Length: 131
Image 1 (spheres, rainbow, N blue to C red):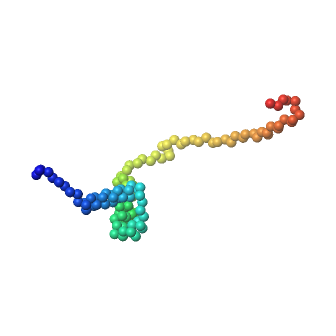
Image 2 (cartoon, rainbow, N blue to C red):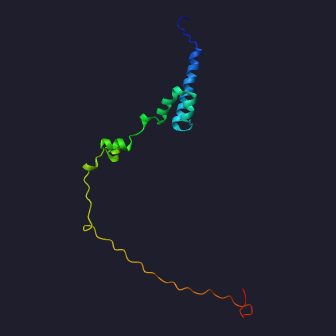
């Protein structure tokens, strides 16, 4: 009987595990967009969670991408920022008008369609049978 181990459940641990699971599920729903909470609601209900909430949702100023002004001051263009390729390093040959044959577009001729007069209905006293 000395080899038998018994474990007891600690109620505080069970409650803590349930709370952590609940918070994790709510965060997963918020990140995937299935459940939405306004940042104003978070500011009113839990002001101490306002800045972490904004960082998690990408609304905090530290998580915003660089603005055009800061890119202009750093000298980087949008292409260089995204791809890492400097446009000055690319060698692109642009053909001039003399090297490419010109495409001749035929002029459109206006065709006249004569307007015909509508057919007049036959009078009722005609000799032709109806039907």
